[in-house]
Length: 135
Image (cartoon, one colour):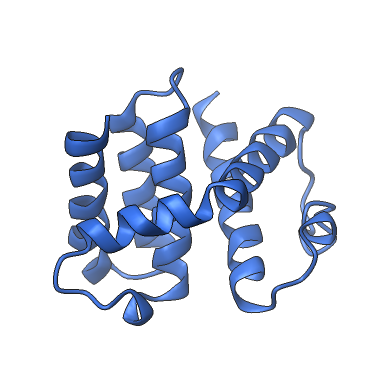
C-alpha cells in the first residue's frame, strides 16, 4: 500500500504545483491529462482527496506554515516546498489512519526527490512543529 500512497503523493504534489504556478481550474488538473503513466483507481482517489483537502483548507494551512517557518518570509519559500508543506500538514491534521511520522517521512522523501537536500531540515522542522503544537 505504501508504494501506491507514495505515487499518490507524487501525483498530488504535481497537481498542487500546477495549481500554484498556472492557476488552472482544479477540475481540469484533477483529470490528470498531464500525467502520462497509468494511475490505479486507489492512487487517483488518494491523490484527489489530498488535492481537494489542501485546496479547501489552504488558508488555514498557510497560516500554520507562516507560524512555524521561523525566520522565513512565506513569499520566499519555493513553490515546491509550499506544496509539500501544504499536503503534509493536511495529512498530519486530517489523515487519522496514516501515522504523522509516515507523513513526515514521505514529505522528506518528496523534498529530496523534487526539491533539494538543503530543504529537508526546513520541511522537517516545520512539520514537526505542526505535529507538536497543533495535534
